Amino acid sequence: MTRKRLWQWIVSIVVVLPFIELSAAEESKVEYAATRIIQSGSGPFAGEVSSQIYVSGNKERIETQVGSQYMITIVRPDKHVAWLLSPQEKTYQEIAIDNTFSVNHERYFDRSKLKMVGEENIEGIKTIKYKAVSAKGLFAGHIWLSEKSIPLKIKKADDKVSGQSAVSIILRDLQVGLQTPSLFELPQGFKKVP
Image (cartoon, rainbow, N blue to C red; front, side, top):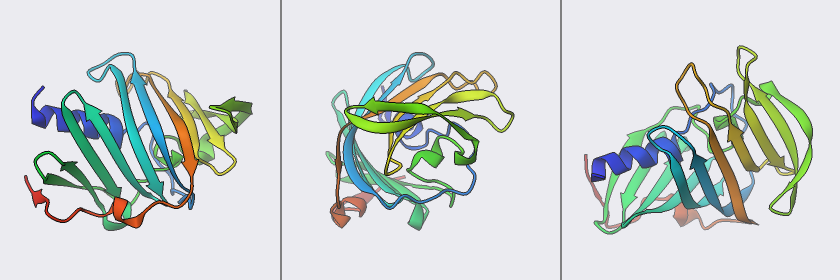
């Protein structure tokens, strides 16, 4: 896999996984770190990706090892930017993101379309399970939110219209607490590349 293709894959599956149109996003004030597992059974991105994530408000840092490539993605909606860092080469790419991009669950499902299904424990944490429907009222998937609105699990159904395949996301080893602000800043000494 070429470096460019690898970046496209990481951006598609880890950063901008836009399942359903967003309404106005509610920013979560919860800070946490976790291991995020993304599984897709079909399509060009079939397989499993494990990442370490750090979240502070609407800022997110994603550290991913894919083969021999170690990549860091820093998402900063407040600055309308995401940085894709290659620590081995000390380089980064910059992509513009719009005002509606958010790292919390509204990125995946429109909260106004969620319907409570029940309660479940995910990774030992009490959650409320919601059914999500699209703007047309079609089943879109499920999301499990903690009491602090942390999306501990997301299951998105196949979308025949957009061609997006089913995806499952789960957080493991959740640690709620303040995150170091420098995690969400562009490190010094990195060179910008196109």
